[in-house]
Structures are given as structure tokens and as C-alpha cells.
Length: 464
Image (cartoon, rainbow, N blue to C red; front, top):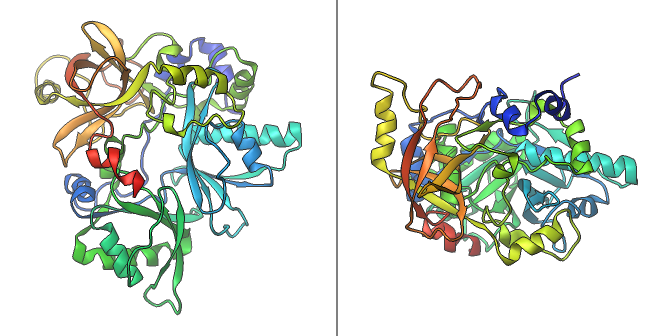
């Protein structure tokens, strides 16, 4: 039997010490790394149109039963008053103190799967495990009608996934779709699902393709999905329709930087520690192998790593029209949030020094990966100003379209855009993870900017 998180904590004592040394890799994308080169690929969703294969890298939880909405609403900050077929929501869970456990996308499908499932939660396994725990608990202890089928990503699963998922995104996305549809693209509200009819080569009739209106990098587009057996034909149709518009296939390297442009923090540290009996029960249920790992310069007690929805720019999703874990705490936090989401623009000279240190004698700085610098599942680097910690940097990488090294951060609300700060890059002392080499900690000067960084992603695309 695998060691549970509770057993590992009893052995080590401190959750930060435990997860800093857990040999758990940063998130990887089981997709071809590059189809051309990641620099050109990552420019395409701003310049022409990009096709991203999302079929393989996310965990999926298929839910059944009449009590899905009741169970989920008790652990979600989101309203379920609009929970109906054809609508998706960014499901967010917090603990009793209002700190985030995780987030994912909840789809209420227009058409059920072959197994009859109409609701699916997609994302990293962190939130999905929390939902699984509550589904089992509600079913076994409260007699609720809720069940699930867990489908791991393609690194964890044997066989094909249930769905193909393709993101078509960029300024020419609608032109590509118009060609496939043979007419104008219907108006679809943000985070709504629409049925499209694609006429695929060799198919006697039109093929129904469901499309979610959203964009992974904050550009116009849709996420198309359907039975995996139809995926190759749909992909070829998209590529053929997009050829004249400069469509570009996106590999894993380029895809990994999309959160830096959309402003989505991929893996906030899960607030599952503390003395609350419910979370003690959860840690007994959760295997250590699914708990993740910490990377970065932030140290101190576990409280330093916890973030609220308002810290992450997710406050717009919080709705107090129902009872949920953490409601009272978030009502207090909403009045005066302590932090806000921001982009940090790293100084080119300091980034160059990190690279140069790899080519000189002595202990180098922590290796800075391109295009994505994350080396822990939860990346938390300290942000300081005048010797005072003013926030945390959570995800860093190179955005080729802007030729900038950026990171997403949560910073104190009194630190304005344009302010100068420093990111502490590297660990002191170095952790024992296999992917952490001996290195020296360095300071990287940075400028605070809005998040998302591009004005279009901040102001327009959600309203289309």
C-alpha cells in the first residue's frame, strides 16, 4: 500500500520540508515537444492562428448522479444557479480560511459520453482529488447520488482518452472556422458550449463537434472536443481549413507558456494542511504520490504559500449565493484583499547573467529553462522590495512574441504597476530533488505590470 500524505507528514513533520524534497517532477505535457520550433509556434496565436492538442495532458473526472450540483456547490466558490447543459465554469475550491485548494474547468455537456456521463471536470489532479474525496464521502456517509470515473492524463493512463480536445486560437481563428462551416461563425458567449457541424472528408454526413468558447492564451478561439475516435479526422480538417491562414501546430514547449499570456496560475499551492478534522481525513485518503512538490526560493511556514482567489485574480468567480466551505472567510477577505495578481517583467541583463553563470567557473545560478522555468510542481519564488517580502512569483518563462522573460505573481495591493521589485531565483539551501543541481541563489530585478500582460486578454476576449 502506498504511503499517504498523512503518514509522510508524521514521518517528516513539516509540509514545506516534505514537499520541497519530494522527487515529484514539474508538470509535463505528453505532446510532441516541437512541430517546427517553439519560438515560432508561440508567436502564432498572436499573429495568425494556432492549433493546440489538449487531448493528453489533463486529468478528467466524469461525474454521474442526481446530486452532482448539490455536492459540488458545497465545496465550490462558484454559483450553481446557472448549472445547465451547454455551460462551463472555472470551478474553484478553498479551505475554511478561504485559501485555494485548486481549480479546474467543469463542463456540463450538450451530449453525454458513450458511458452516459454529462458532467466532466478537467484540470490538474489537485482539485480533482479533492472532488473525488467529497464524492466518495457524500455517497458513502450521506447517501448522495453521485459517482465518478477517473481518467488520468496520457502519462498515467493506458489506452486512448474519452475525448479529443483541440484549441483553435488566434486572430485568424474565426476565418478558419468560417471555412469549415461554410458560413459565418455563430455568436457564442464566453465559457458556453456550442454544437458545430464539421463536414469531414470521407464522412457521409456532417460530424457534430462541441466547442467551448474560450482561449488558453487570451486570444479569440474555441476548444473543440468529441469522441477520440473522430479526433484525427477533425484535426486534419482544421489543418486543411487553416492552411491558407497560416495555421501552426503547437508542441508541448510552446503550449507551456500560454498561462503567462492568459494570466492563469497553473498550480497554486493546495491549502490542505492545518488542524481541521476534514483535512486530516483528506490527508489520510490522499497518497503522497499525488501531493506534488515545491520548487523555488520561498521558505518559512506553510502559511507563506497559501493564496486566496483574490490573490490569483479569481475574485470574479466568487459568489455568495450558496453555502460552501470557506464562505465566511471569503466574505471578510473580499472587503479588503491583501494581494492581487500581476505580471513581472524580468530585467534582460539579470536574465543574461543567469545564463552567463552556466559558462563561467564556480557555482552557477539555478539553471533557467527556456521557454518555461518551472522545476517544481508548485513553483514559489520570493518577491521582495527594499528588503521586504511583497509577494510570490508562481510561474516563469519566455514569451517569444514580446521577447520578454515574464512571471506571474501575487503581490501586495499597495505595490503598483510600474514598481521595481526583485525575484529571488534559486533555493537556499538547495533541495534534494533529483532535478535540482547545486546552484547559487541570485536576485533578478523586475518591473510590475498588469496580468494578463496583453491588453486584449485583460479587457476584450472574455466579452466576445
